Length: 357
Image (cartoon, rainbow, N blue to C red; front, side, top):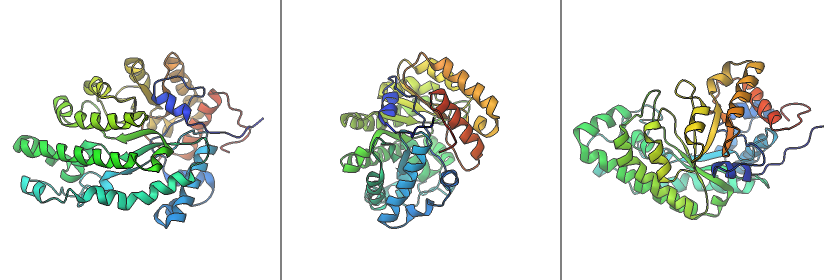
């Protein structure tokens, strides 16, 4: 007999704290709005760009999708890169705004925090108004130091700067780290921060075979900024989840020492989820599980075998939240997502008379 799903955000919070949750939580970094609309049977994505009441309605739909799909905690963040003046070198492949120290000195750094809250304060307030009982969010202030710096310089140009102008290279990370801290400090002081049970930002530090900067550069220029923000988050009693794609094994111990409570992202060609759990499951929570490519390609039977094998190997570890190793973008077939979702929900004992509702 089907029973209505009742969310309990504490399951996700416990997993982030590397503790066993009463119910294995589902987790996604991002689910594209087109898939959510298809499941709900109506459009709602455009409401996010309307007035306040439209934004509240957007989040009511957003939360309802996650409730009927069995999620205790949806993910949502507003990214710092959206508030950068002349940004887009990372996200939109534009020419970088900063190439020289003169560019750095002329850049209107003091405007970023103001722009961030001008753009997003109303969004966060609408989210907090719409969230239903038992549900809280994962996320907050999106983007880490590395992604923000890249959005102003471009990755290739940043590599040139590292060799040609070490002073500028260091100044970029220091300045962005300071701004990121101030934005998080202000965000955490707002009532809407309580709509979040786990704080998170994403900063993709790696590619398929290594880190995008040297491990030493990450330790020197990036991780200290993380540590300050994570300490601030911990002072508010919240755990911190890092989303970071790529092969980042060379800096994982440093990230753990900086205070991350949990980590998300896995790709089988780099290392299956079970490897991350085996290496770090005694220290931090692990979020992820199935390669997004597998969600796209596997049949129901193949996916069930894949997921059950992964979960069996993770049974002795406490802090697990299961979902795709990256996200659910618009090229993921609805059938693949629904199959993954159903397999995990039935694994944890739910009786689904019909699906997805």
